[in-house]
Length: 107
Image (cartoon, rainbow, N blue to C red; front, side):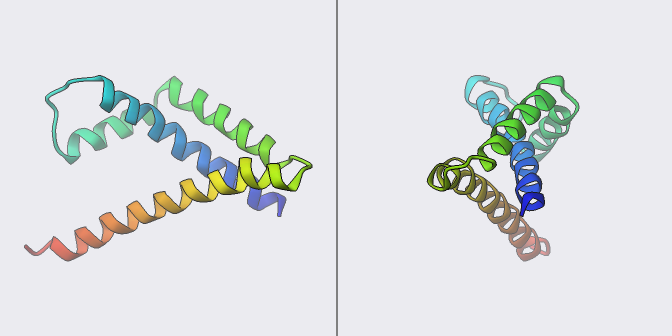
């Protein structure tokens, strides 16, 4: 079970490190760039940034520490619920885009 917690912590850390600055950037900047290419470019660019890796390491440390808590209610509230929510939402978004791509690619 420790392997699952470690892998889940890493996955959630990378997802949150990608999404948190991205959402903040979208809400605070007023750029004219539109379309999926602008979003993809910003996503790839952030993977190579120093801020992304610092946030990923910090999120991983927080989630990994929360997964090791001795109190079961605290571990559930601080690790399992947020981690499974982030992963489930990410899988749902990827599944939605995949469905839309497959459904409308011949239109």
